[in-house]
Image 1: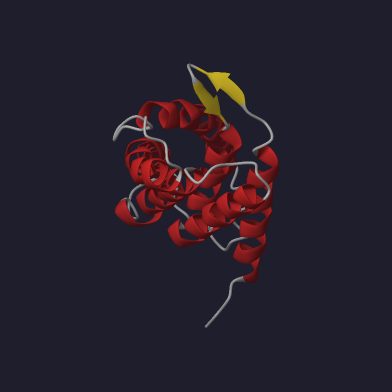
Image 2: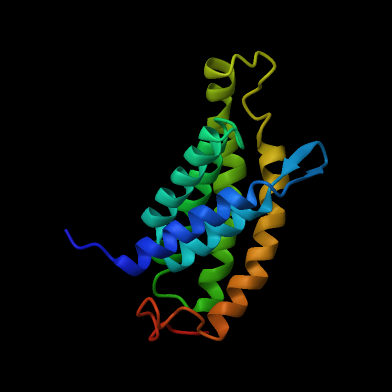
Length: 179
């Protein structure tokens, strides 16, 4: 098994950034908005790929729960969003230009976190957290409100980084097509 040390170090850095970034949150339309996790999900999805992004999101959620900085619902929201962001960027639109692939990475994070992650949070809230007020789609809007802020920040950051090829040669992607 070949381990990519550069990706491992970047995933560890992004995991630490997500954990520390979870200290920064603000209320937004009744939801606790923590944009750093969503920013990290997109950066990991685009630069590391879907599996590394999934692993980074899992580790960040686990560490946040161990230290009491998050809830069990952090797992499905962050993990699905990170994975779907990477899938949309690397697998679904692999042959397309960068201008096409990046927006779909952002959409993957939004849809994965809010719709899929929000729906998967219902059984966790109801069965494991004993939240009897939980509804099947009750977490979709709060998860969307939280992820949209981080996605907008990531869109500005990642689009700029990809345009100037920041980190591309570090990961051996200097031959990525730009469109």
